[in-house]
Image (cartoon, rainbow, N blue to C red):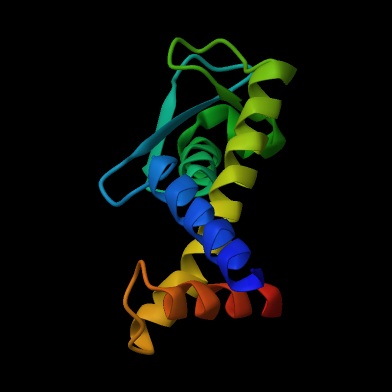
Length: 135
C-alpha cells in the first residue's frame, strides 16, 4: 500500500514537473534597466531570470553616464522605461521561487536516470523519493 502511495506521489511530481517546465533550454528572459536620471534603456537576457536582471543592471551601471556619479540610480524597468512596481517585483520573486523548486525536483530525477533507473518504473519512483528526502 505504501509503495503504491509513494509511486502515485512521485508520478504526480513527475507530471507536475513536466507540465510546468516553462524554463527549458531555449527560453530567454529579457529584463530592462535604466538610470533614474537617464533615458537610455539597457537590456539583459539569459535563460535565468536573475541573470537577465543582473545583466541589465550591470550594463546600466557600466555604460550610463549618470551611473558614474550615482551607480545605485540604475533600476529595473519595463521595456518602455516605466519603473517596475511592487506587484511586478513580487511576481518576479515568485517566478524565481518556482524555478528553484522545479530545479530541486529535477536534480533527483536526473541522478536516478544516471544511476540506471528507468523513468516511469516503481524503482525509479522509489529512487526519486529517497533523493528528495535527502535534500
